[in-house]
Length: 223
Image (cartoon, rainbow, N blue to C red; front, side, top):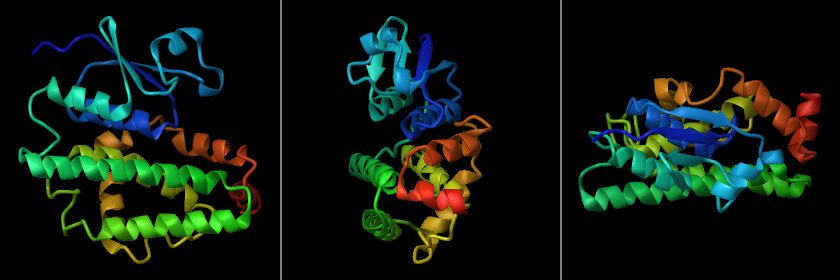
């Protein structure tokens, strides 16, 4: 199948954009990438993106939005698949992708919490979600074994956050989840996960967190 002209509308920090970039890199899909300022969305972007969110994928003259839809499309138009063949296992992978999205929501609540009590609650919520995830993992490099999958593409951007968080304090997010910790280490060494962000990603995230006027912002200022 001939690959259409693809342009991914992106933001430097967005974990949902990173999912699509990882798939493109994994499958060697030629594409163009354009970064926009989400605090000042261009009018042309709002015209093509019904939800006003990134990523959006321009496919010739068509537009796709929502990261899972984009990732599935990219997977389907290229040889091989980042999903398993078995329909039930494939559905389970999609379930854990959705669980990954819930972790991203918790991360957003964690770094945005204004008060210590809410911040501590969100810290525990993340720890509990990683404990749930621990029970799904095997002693293997990736989520489902030796083969990198779309689940791995989703969790790579999740784990990247904690490299920056851990610079400020030892939160013990993974102290009770050794398999999750190993999976994190494996994903953060994987080429497509590494290359899904700009080299200055840690500094960009640091500056973003400082400006949140949150409880975490206060911790960062004295760290």
